[in-house]
Length: 321
Ligand SMILES: C[S@@+](CC[C@H](N)C(=O)[O-])C[C@H]1O[C@@H](n2cnc3c(N)ncnc32)[C@H](O)[C@@H]1O
Image (cartoon, rainbow, N blue to C red; front, side):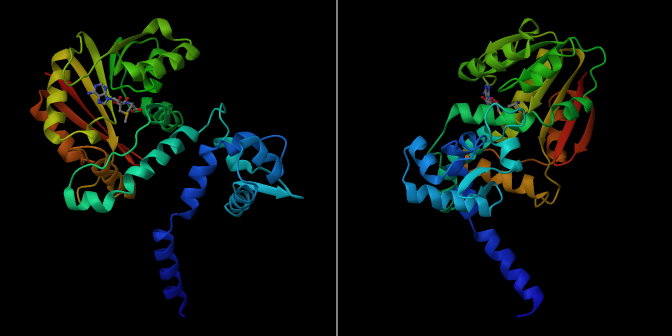
């Protein structure tokens, strides 16, 4: 077989394969990496700790070695560097919560065939904690980069709309800004713990509520709307932007962070695939192009609309007239 044909076939099979993903999701669900940090363990020792089947455990551990997530030395298994840095709970770069969230999404994505016929979400599973802590895992490595995209000159009061775990609220508060973090009450319980741990409790006010139906308060210099619109329709997004405009001080600004989607709607890969996540999990959500978000801003009472792109994310901002 020619080299290119062989490469094409490999790529196709890789696209169709789910095995590596499923193995990692299961290993993470059983917190295998917490147990194999120090010292290493045999399959039998681990299966006793986890109350799992010995044969199944050994096969899973071997596959994790093949995936370079574990090392096997004289019959004992230990985390490899990647697992040690990202998959052990409590470590600063921990990604286990977002992987737990992907485990939940697995159930929902298994309904994609049905969704394609019905056009309706297939939301079989949901776990609020892994969703919210997963957002924290995703934001922690990016937060200082994101803040560099936001002009905070003269800003003393920020509303973090749907601020989730409060990762961005905490970063604003560390810059001596007073923040209102609005989200559902069950989210705020999780955010509160992170805020206390970060030592910025006095500068963050928690506002429980639904931002579609409840009052947002007022007097804000800046409203940060990060990763909200992709879960909503264009119509709902415009209504959120109009409501936010009313809550801003004159000259105040809204900053929107979203997954980037180019005008073709087929790239980058992250934005194009995330649209399917929203198709499966929400009623009217998808990813949007900067032109779409820019036009919503203009029709919602904002001027001087600007765009900035950072990796696979877009930042749109506008000033209240
Ligand atoms: C994808 S997360 C984004 C969290 C955070 N803004 C970030 O960028 O990391 C969406 C957040 O919006 C919250 N949310 C969505 N709809 C909401 C609503 N109608 N009212 C209040 N919070 C809402 C969710 O609870 C969740 O915390």
